[in-house]
Image 1: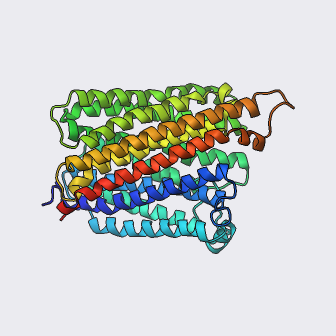
Image 2: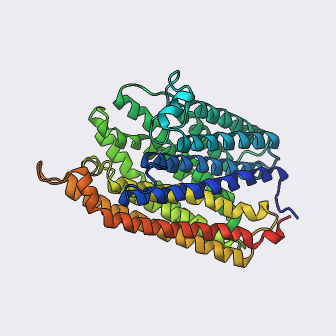
Image 3: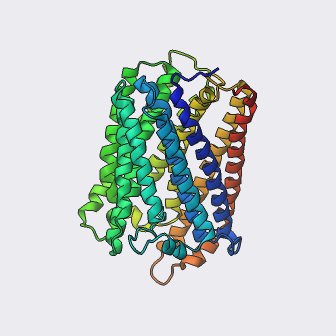
Length: 462
C-alpha cells in the first residue's frame, strides 16, 4: 500500500537511488586518492591521481544534484498540494542526466583528458580543464538542458498549486544554481579573470544558492517530523536565508585576495566571511528548538537524527572551519594547504551530503511503500551508519587540520631559505595522511552500513 500523498512523488525514487550509487563511487575514489598520497604508485598506471581527483569531485557534484532534484520532486507536489506537472518529463530527464554523467566519468577513466577534450570538440568552445568543472562542453550543455527541463517541471507545479515559503525558497535556490552554472562556459585566457569567474560557480553555489536549497529541505523535514506550526518554521527560514545570502554573496571576496583585485576586497571578504557562520549557528538553534517543541513523536527517528546532525555538522564544517582560515591575514599563510581540504570535507558533508541523506531517510520509507518510517531494526542500522560516517568525517577533518597546521609551520612560516619545499613537507605529513585514510575506511564501512538498512524492509516493498 502506497503511503505517498501524491503518486507523482514516486519519480524521486530513481534520483535518490542513483545519487546513492554515485555517492558510493565518490567515496571509493576518495580512498584511492588518499592511498596515493602515501603510496605514490598505487594504481598510478590505471587511475592516476589527477583522474581519481576529477572523478572524486565530479561524482560529488553530480550525486548532490541528483539528490537535490529528487528532493524537489518529492517535496514540491506535497507543498503545492498538486501532482507534479509532468512525471514523464522527470523520468526522461533522469535518464538523460544519468547517461551524460556515466559517459563523462567513463571518459575520464578510459581516455586521456587531452584526447577527451579533442573528441568532444573542446577546441571550438573551450570550457574544460577547470577544477570541479572538468566536464566536456557537450556534457555541460546537457546539464543546462536537464536543468531547464527540471526547472520548467518544478515551476509549473508550483504555479498551478499552493505557494508556500518552502517552495519559493527552494525554486529560488534551484534557479540560482542553474544561472551560476552558466559561468562554467566562460573560460577567459587570463588566469586571474578565469579564477574570478570560476568562483562565481563554485562559491556562489556552495556558500550562496545551495544554502537556500538546504534551508528549504530542512524546513520541510522539520514541519513533517515535529508538527510545529508552519508559520514559526517559515519565519526562521526567512532569517536564515537572508543572513546566508548577504554573508555568502559578499563573502565571495575571500577568494579575491589572490586575483589582483582592489585591496578593499580584503576588508569586504574578511568581514562578510566572518559573518558566514551566523546563519549556520542560527540553523542549529532552529533545528533543536523545533525538535524540542515538537507536537508529535514522529516514528522516523533516523530522519530526526539526520536533520539535527545536518545543522550541527554544517555549522562546524562550513561555519567554524570556514572561519578558521577565512580572514585575509590568516589566509595569507593557509591558502591552498590541507586546512582548506579539512574545511571542504566537513562543510560538504555537513551541509549538503547530510541534507540529501535527511530527505532520503524521510522519503524512502514512503516511496518504498513501507509506511511513515522503516522498521526499528532498519532505523537502528541506519543510525549506526549515521554515527560511523559522521564520527569518521570528524576525524578526517581533524587529521587534515593537523596536516595543514604542520604544513604551514614547515613550508610557509619560516624565513626565506629555511622553509621546506612542498614535497619535503608532504613527507613530514604522512602520519596524518595514513590516519586520514584509516578514517576514510571507517566512513566507507558507515556508508555500507547505512545502505544495508534498505535491505531489512525489502519484503514490505510492493
